[in-house]
Length: 475
Ligand SMILES: Nc1ncnc2c1ncn2[C@@H]1O[C@H](COP(=O)(O)OP(=O)(O)OP(=O)(O)O)[C@@H](O)[C@H]1O
Image (cartoon, rainbow, N blue to C red; front, side, top):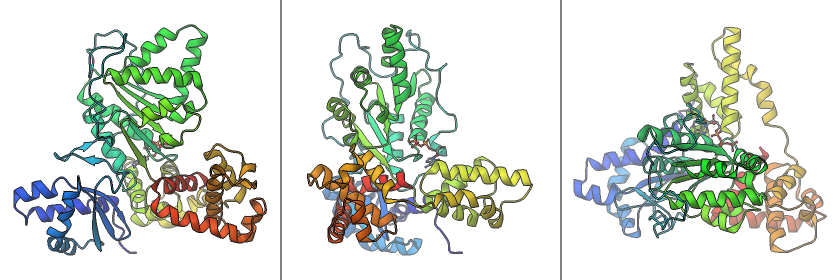
């Protein structure tokens, strides 16, 4: 079997190159030109490195020979190294001159603002004596969701770095931090990890983790039983508010209104807010603009599905925490057969471990294939054009029938083209068949739509993200 590099090995490639360069370059040059650079991602055999500003572009030229030498010596599978500023790679965090990350908007969003009447005047973490809801006693934090249990891969390293920065400097690094990504990608894990980490550094901090659904239900009950004062007191007096699945608030005007004030109070008193969602702020349909725009005040970090190496590393880490020996070929087999959802990946492993312990057998490839057969078979179930249409319509907040109409307004055309593209990618339907299922479109129209999305996807990051997300949902 060929060697599969671990996620850590892939991720650390730039760190390892830097390690080699550090030995060859004088200290001052290294500190000035190389230390502020960061690994960004790897695409194919190109390593992308983030640089704080265009001045750093010359790093590539200046140290080209030494970089190449390091790549050769370290036997890395890299043909090219590209240096990009955050502007060239807008999904990346900005890097300050001191090497830390700065918020995307250039003006400081974390500067103290005048307090609103009634808002706690003091910034930072308040003293423990303050009368408030006891979030410690009610702790919602899962002890397993810690930073060191989180496996870093190219799809989540940005979100991880941002979460760690927030945990280290609550309300000063990025406020709010908005994490988004598909189902089971680790958003909740990162939020809890932030909570644990803040708590470790500042034991008196009150950390509130709440889902959008729970926030809504508590609010409804408080209205019903005339307890709005204590509801407000509870959520507006925390040091760190971690609110998960914010998309649940879609269309719930009163809850949004309440959350808007909670957000303002906390932000103005320099308390940290972390929000998780299944989509970026601008795709949150049925949300008030004033809320959506606030979500964009700090830093937005997405989590992309894990690649194969990351999936293998996650499995190995989970097996380790269960004190189970997981052979590499088995880890690879599970990682390649279970699609992108980490929760399902874990589910497969838990099932395998339980099965082997019940039958008193070692984990081998044969046993794994037998035990996970049904699990894997359901994974490869067929995806239909109807399912694609439903997913696309739901994502864009429209009706399936609209995708099939003769309406050529932009709001309809783009989702329709995306749906046709997905139909081609994810089903075996022919172009005429796809055309038929979209209200009788000619196959050349279908071909044109697919070509258009295929091309745009390469340059339009948001579109690419939307497509990845839809594929993930459908899988
Ligand atoms: N990179 C990772 N390393 C280790 N475990 C991970 C990673 N990503 C996800 N997990 C694990 O996968 C499971 C699902 O993650 P989590 O609940 O955080 O996902 P989510 O993005 O919040 O999903 P949802 O949108 O369904 O709430 C958790 O057990 C989590 O620990």
